[in-house]
Length: 238
Image 1 (cartoon, rainbow, N blue to C red):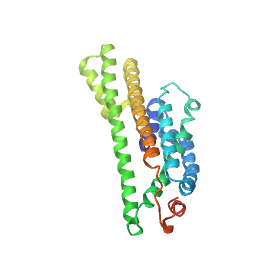
Image 2 (tube, rainbow, N blue to C red):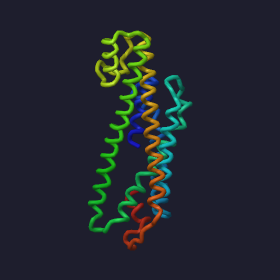
Image 3 (cartoon, rainbow, N blue to C red):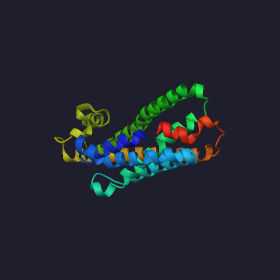
Image 4 (cartoon, rainbow, N blue to C red):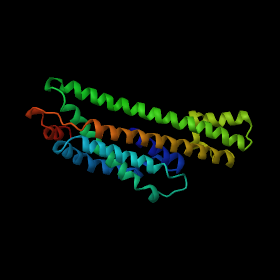
């Protein structure tokens, strides 16, 4: 899910040419959706079970990433706007149920430890997720760009430098190719979009699998003491 926000910003800035500030404002619908969905998810997690909002949130994020992969570099904001509320709602539905699911399954004496482990896992998962999807994007971008430059008969030494600039950020990365020939800019943008689409599909598939696993593995609702009532926990963590 953290990778979703990362790639959304990457798409708007490197593919659509938005400035960082414009990309931030363009992402506001997802932020508003998080603010609306988060308290709803807490209520649902407390009333019925964390499984329903958590699985629904993962599925919505999967839809958002998959939907974003259908758009290229020549689209308007209104065309992919629908992705943003789906992404924000999906993320908002997930955060509180995760905490509720964990806190309702530990003894009160271990609540602090459980909360710390959950937060650490969330942050670590975000870092690893972004890195993994970034590796998918980079690998695809590198191979595709090498093919396109070879087809355009760009000298091998120049092609290697261009690929390095596009994959490692050397010389400003793909966002600073304004002084290069048009064929190189087009090839780089095409390769970037291919890599981005593959990363988005990979993230979407992983989220969808996670949603299915949550729906299957969290079907049971364990018995809890009254002090660990899920509605009370949802109000505290929400």
